[in-house]
Length: 310
Length: 316
Image (cartoon, chains in turn yellow, cyan):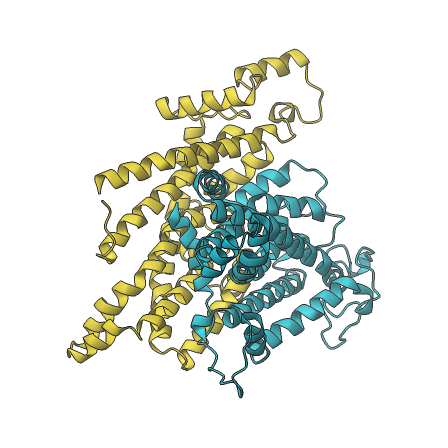
């Protein structure tokens, strides 16, 4: 087990370095100049431009910049400063991340509870009315793009019915975040429901299910233990990789409901070409993605004792 | 990283079809290919019929927008500004879906915006299928070091959040035409199909007929394209069709964020983005492009499901 984890952690290093390098190259080699952008329409003094570039290390070759950035980040937890206002990127991230995390946690909980719930109902009644209704419902959810879903929720529940405020206030109360979280988690909810429905409907026909029924086990135990445990592996896989996707996808939901999380920061740092901020954000998202996928692999062994990690 | 490969499969499973079609006993014991079987199955599937009719109309609209409206999508008359509410009774007329903030016909823009979405969806899917298919075949068939390198590069591109990466690439262009958006989406989108193809090829290269072809002295190219490719296509086609809807949705999302297509191009995403500011006063500007967009995505996802249903023998 320990050796397996160590090996997986080692395998993550090239992917981590590669992904951060890729995003770094994308940000810094594509045309556009954040320093010239500071001056708006005015033509800046070349010496001033050169000085600001030098202060931020932007005059060095890209690979050297990458090396400097990564060493500072890994050794001193220093993500650099924003070019526009000199604010440390760690401050910017610390202000924005908790909000998005709150939204993601809520969306994940909704996705888990309702997705699995619908999936179980549909899976146990495969081919019947409830199953078909759930399949059509989830098909519709999958087809509606997230921002459209956001506007539907906003105009129905905020403008027509007046149940919610159209925009989330600055206090970020849990209650206010429910509607954005439903929108954010909606797509994944549909996937979870469909995935768990398929695996459950398949496993219902398995030999061990017939054995369990023949042994006279109570229904609760047959479904709760025998069926669920065997059906959960693909669902857990999806759920795990989805945490990172939810955080990345929050850009859209946050803009629809005016949530002040990383979405706005991402958008602003892309448009203003704040490379340091953007790379810092993506680095954290990549880390979340890599660690959750490791965690899921370890969870497999819990769910299925046949899987052993030597 | 095997787990991420599973995700692609998981997503594919997630959109798994409704209960399997009833087994059809052929009258005679005729030998039919997988594709022949699939075609028989498809023709009976209501999802397939509905989605192909929808897609036929979408293609017709994007090829010949003039058949559906004579109103110009770019000429606006400011006397309709904000007051141009839809007159739903007047089906097909210039103003039946109302006018936008510039006094342009929403219906005409809806019709003329179809082309951008269809081009983005179809072109990204084609590019991604070719690149992903080739890389996946090479990685899966040759294995070893080749596989390791291709798989790690795939992992790296897969690690970049799709929407975010697309935004970064698109922000580098000031004039964002349809082809720029196609490039940005294809640049990050090829990983999924590479993984699907690689998985399929790894299974198929163990098959007896591949060993037989090798023993008979067939060259690598011949084995790859005559023996492996036709048998590995099924999962790729399914994933690609479902992904097509996703690319259309991604284009609209990027346009909504202001980083997708830009103004002279007519697109549903651009119109939705323009309608957001008037969400309280003139909801029709936002509503109709959203409906059209969702229906288009729905059509392609349904088609993908139907094809999947037909091609997966487990579900028969």
